[in-house]
Length: 234
Length: 295
Ligand SMILES: Nc1ncnc2c1ncn2[C@@H]1O[C@H](COP(=O)(O)OP(=O)(O)OP(=O)(O)O)[C@@H](O)[C@H]1O
Ligand SMILES: [Mg+2]
Image (cartoon, rainbow over the protein chains, first blue to last red):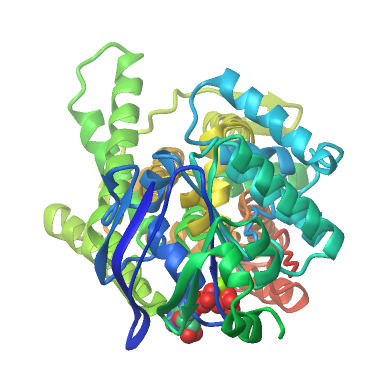
């Protein structure tokens, strides 16, 4: 579904991503794990067109998306929940969700997706008319995910959805990711919380200072000594 | 009675400032730049109006509509073109480079006007039909009534557009977070072009109203209303649409009250003093606010 080949990204002189290749097949949950500054966010930004890669080839559902702008890529069905939520603080919850469906023309589809999101995140329902900036961190994360689901993407990139959340909310969010996946959505998940990420993933890649240093089945990585030491806390 | 008369004069002057200030504030909010050429779009609009009025051998109604429409179209196209040619290539450049470019565009428009029309002021026929209204001792000119009416109408339309249409929401989203807005499928370039189009359209209306009361245009005619409207935008809180409306109105009232009761020479100094005092008390302007951030 998503194929990335020999991706290189620079920030000025900093070579942040050093020729990585990876792929995500339809229906999979794939994790990208790695320490702070490894280049996970940069990788997702390059895929969804928020930053320009210096070189490399990305293909989404058989289409070359190398030089496409982010707004075009999302219209192909590649959703992205960015790091740090980035909900529109001065828009209400409903307005944020409506923005999520900006690329969708069909009113009936929008209504259906809206009801679906409200079902997944009942807490948003009570806060429909509230400004997003006044939501708690967890509620903002729910809104960020709900907003991305509004366009009913075929594939979703999630950048640290558990960041800064209480364990119980993290569980909820991981449940929802799995639910979406069961309904046919392909997932690429970036997480600090490697243990949880691996436990719901089919496969995973380990990123270290811009290089992929390990890849394989999630269950194998969970039991790998090196991975345990470096990312799973011993 | 004189006080009310001056107040109404101030409201009408302030409406024009508000219309211009909206262009500054919307462009600032969305493209994060100060478009110092905005005032000169008003000057171009006034020249266009004078040219279009002369050429008309039309029916009385058409002789109003024709120059007005031509003026609106020219300003809108001019604003969008300026953005495309001068500012878009600098989208990722330093703010200082963009600011200097904007000042350059301003001088460019003034120089072109100077080359074509010379430095003499050119007469512009008012497109507002002559009429007036007297309520007791208060006298309302046709220009004042038209200015107030048009401004109220425009502001209602703009508020509805920004708050309730999808494109309006997209504009607010872009002004807050361009990247996140792109992830929703919003084309940022189109949104910025649209913002310039709206700002310049409002400038055209301001131009028509302004020059219809004033009667003349010269190459530098846009500079003063431009600066005043910029002050109004900052006063109200730059980036805030209600702020620009409020700032313009307040500025107009202060200016005409100062002229009437204090001194014509000091009026501008008073206007700027008010700006400084407001910014000392509230650095973001009257309705401007810091983003609420939650980490
Ligand atoms: N805008 C930028 N300008 C310069 N360097 C950057 C920029 N963004 C990221 N970097 C650098 O690129 C490298 C990768 O950053 P990135 O944000 O992709 O890491 P990450 O794996 O997502 O980290 P984290 O887990 O902390 O979110 C880091 O060394 C970072 O300092
Ligand atoms: Mg990151």
